[in-house]
Length: 100
Figure 1: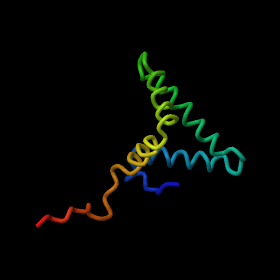
Figure 2: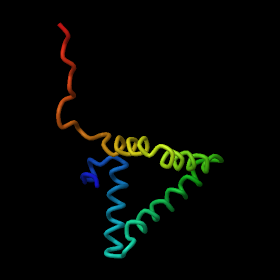
Figure 3: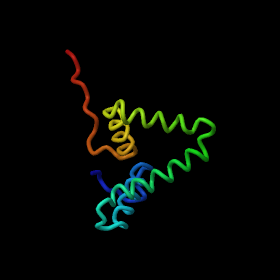
Figure 4: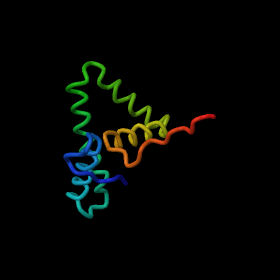
């Protein structure tokens, strides 16, 4: 799934992942625990879009949905990038070999 991190080091998406895991645990062995947990997060997200997204809140949601449906690879890359942003590098970046 994803790497767990402590709250003090977690970026916002990692914190949401942690909350999702807590919600799944709350539902226990219920057959659709993961869907129930995801639906709770979605309900809250939709409410926040509606309250704070201005008159174009639905257009913003539709853009995210279109991205997830029409370009799932890009959607996955965005999630991976955001999930990993803010983490310290475990090794220095590779450098190109100098040309003679």
